[in-house]
Amino acid sequence: MEKQHIRLYIKTRWLLGLTATQIHDKLTTAYGQGVVSYCTVTRWIQRFSNEQESFEDNPRSGRPITAITQQNIDAVKDLVNDDPHISIDYIAAILDISHGSVDAILKQHLGLRKITSKWVPHKLTQEQRQRRIDICIENLQKLESGIWRLCDIVTGDETWIYHRKIKSKEQSKAWVTKDESPPTQVRRQQFEKKYNVYDFFYDKWTVTNS
Image (cartoon, rainbow, N blue to C red):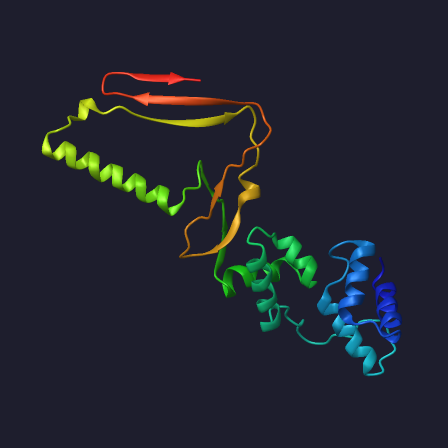
């Protein structure tokens, strides 16, 4: 959609008494996300309220105006807080600024990096974690006291193996600070064909059942 048409629509709806939020919502509903940013709608309403009739951009002189402003930095921060998996292109479309400006804000001003989430097989509760710690301490004490020998211990685990991958690592990437650990993501139960595999380990043999 042409910029002039969008600006004409903004002015018409503003004259009819609609707010910037209402105008932006209607444009997004009609033409989809990224057609125009909320900041752009408010900027043109401000121009029309100052009795500026032109739908053309103001002529620029000198060095180009940077999009890396405190307002945009705060806006990018809010978007990332709402959705850590958000893409640079989507942020650029929402705020109506360039891909390079968003990249600079994320990495240079907010100190963020996008990394792949760490897969974990199970999401344990605090009680389940404590139970595992208690069992390990008890077993260690039995080994140290001579009640048990290392060769007497049989351990094992189980897992579901899907016929196909449910979600790619690219989709699990999230923005985090340099000091943060990778976020974890639990594998969801899906209606997919899968095998349940059990492994038992002894000092002399290994058994695998499926």
